Image (cartoon, rainbow, N blue to C red; front, side):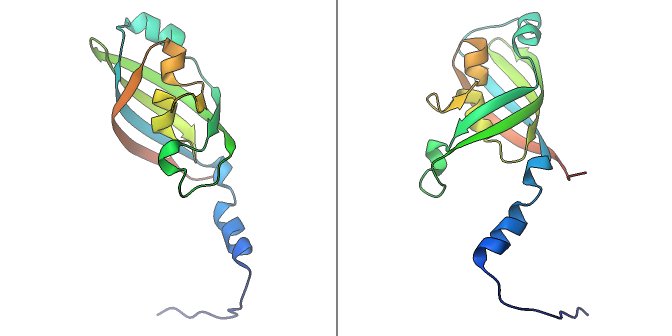
Length: 138
């Protein structure tokens, strides 16, 4: 049984602010399968994909109809790329909550800088994306 007391009206902006509170401190882990337009050795991937990376992410085209057009700074805290076949890699990422990971991989027509594609100087397409962990703020 749950009892709720002292309920009162408030502005929508207060509720929105409470929901967003601490979002920047949260981190998420992802695993992505990526197809590249060029082949890279494991050594090249290790050398080219450095972290942490600060991104400038404009609102992605795929969500622009429901999100405000703005540029969001986001951090990729760690990147590990594992070559699994010619032109295919698995990316393990830890990112700041709110990072558009699909767009970080392919660049969203230049709307996310840098991107995996721009870091490797090739086209990168995401084939699969899974959230593997969500870290709460400390």
